[in-house]
Length: 101
Image (tube, rainbow, N blue to C red; front, side, top):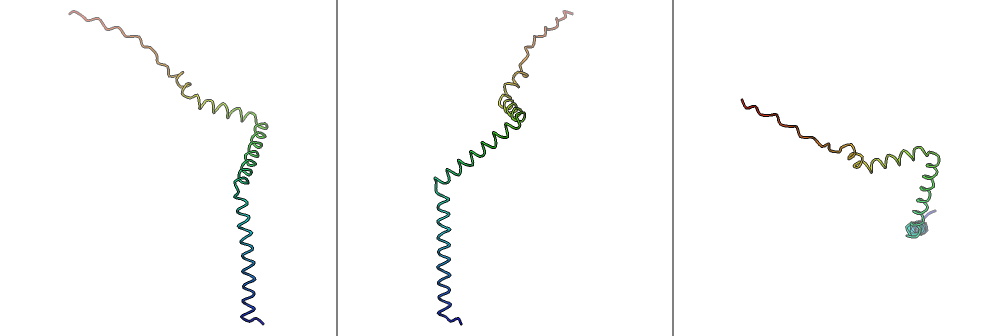
């Protein structure tokens, strides 16, 4: 049979277990948010991204060449446009002679 004292003891045990779980969760969060851990995680992600990128470039050199060419064209668009937009020197048109009539 459960009485008030038994219910209170069960509640205290459950509360203590909940506090332990919460304390463990807070410790885990603090460990994950440590700046050294975050920096190492970011370094690992960066290295993985570079590795995947290099592997992709090795498998698809044509795509890489096209991307580099497109980037070069975008960066040099003003110079390229200037080549086609050169001003032409216009020769002056001689004036028609005035008639003395």
